[in-house]
Each structure stands twice: as structure tokens, then as C-alpha cells.
Length: 238
Length: 84
Figure 1 (cartoon, each protein chain N blue to C red):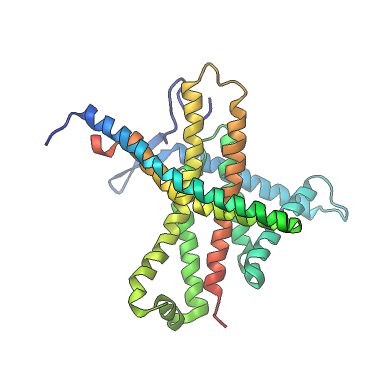
Figure 2 (spheres, each protein chain N blue to C red; figure 1 turned 90 degrees about the vertical axis):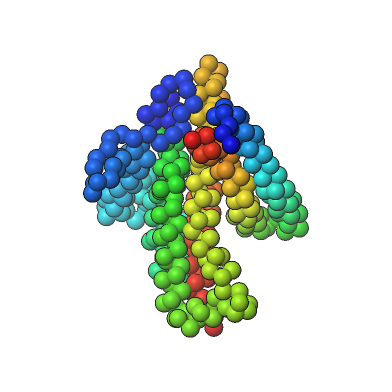
């Protein structure tokens, strides 16, 4: 019962197809990842509307839900400000969004879903968005001359190494998140699949470590590295 | 040369085990990071939260190579590209 839509009494942490359809002659599958990601997104949208309502009807002394929302915004803003300095107003919306999305995705294993971030098709786009943001801001703040000069550090013949280093950023970012979440999913699936008779109550400890602790750390790391890279790209070198 | 599929699957399992030797490096690296963080907290207990955050970030980055080994092991065990 650990993972959504899994069959009982066997090791099952794979992504399953829910239904398929034809698009331009290709068979396209809607998988459990899509279903889980939709649930995560709907939760976020509902939370967003609830937060908006709470803040519109806000009171001078916040109580209950409003307090939680204000605390969250304050903490996330503080995190972005500490990592990006005076560039933080431009990027805090994006960083806070992916923080909440990745965090909710990572801990969705607690609610019986297969975490969407345990699908490389979800983490690679996140890495590619970071890659796009890095290079857009690099061209915007350092201009073409600065970018070419940056590629030729420390010597001109170092260009291929620097290009490979740039291309490795989204791959290592997305693989880190993917592999961390996947290892948790696999280990929980092994416990639930192989130790069905004795997997009572104590696997909760596994969920606390793999879903909550590891999920929170990896979310923090992904956002922190994204911010570091973007802040580095925004650095005009003055 | 044609090998029996079961032989290839067995070799894949051995390869998966060998791939996880990659776990040694991150273990040593994370231990070093944690040791230095403990020493830093001992010298400057006031900076405890900053040190912990830096340590966790560094450890998570150091973990990456081990995770690559894990991914290779997973592919060998469950996707079995060689036994197709």
C-alpha cells in the first residue's frame, strides 16, 4: 500500500501507464507521474487560493492560517535574500514556487502517491529551466563580450572544458534530485514488497527519513544551487 | 558471441553490486565535512545554524557521485539493457 496504483505483494516502484492516445502517429502515455503531479499542483492551487483569501481578509494580529502563510513567505523570502542579495526581488517568486512544488512533490510519498520528482521527466525540465535562467541572465548582465570572456577563463583553449562544465549543470542538478527521491522510493518499495508481513508501523521511520528529511534537504539544495548559479550569472564583475 | 540471458542477468547483478562501490567516496567526503562542521561549531557555537546549513549543502553536492553509481546499479538491476 506504499505507492499509488501499485499491485500488492510484489516490488513495484515503476511508473505505470494509465491510458495512451495517438498524437501525430506517436503513442503518448498518461502515466502515474502525470496523475501525481496533477494532484500536487491542485493542492498548491487550492492552497494559493486559500492563502489569498486569508490575506485579503487579514487581521492586524495574524492568527491561525494567516500566520502560517506569513511565516512561510517570510522564511522563503529570507532564504532567497540571503543567497541572492539585492537580486532577490526579481527571482523570489520563481524560487519560492519551485521550492513549494519540489517540497510538496518530495513529501507526497507520505500521502501514498509516487513522488513525481522520482521521474526523470519531471526533474530534467526543472534543471533545464535553471539552465535557461542562468544563460539568459548571463547574456543580459554580462553581454556577449562578457560571456565569451567567461568561456575563455583561465586560458582560451579551455573553451571546450568550460562548455562541458556549463552543460553539466542542469544534468547534475536534475540527476541529484531524481536519484535522491528515487532511492527513497525504491527502498520503501523493497521494504513494503519483501517484508509485507512485518512492515507494520516501523516503516514510518523510513518515511520520516526518506520523504521528510531527505526531501526537505534536496529541495533546499536544488533551490540554493539554482540561486547560487543565477546570482553568479548576474554578477557583472564590477 | 551469444550468451545465455540468465548469465547476462547474473553479470548485471554483479555489476550493480560493483557500481555501488561508488558509495565509499561520498561516505568519506560527507564524514570529513561533518567532522569539520563539528570542529567549527566547537570553535564558534554561535554560528551553529549557518554551519549546519553550509554542511548540509556541501554534503548534498558531495553525494552526487555516489548517486551516479546508484543510478547505474538501478539501470543494471531493473532496466537490464544488456539482457535485451
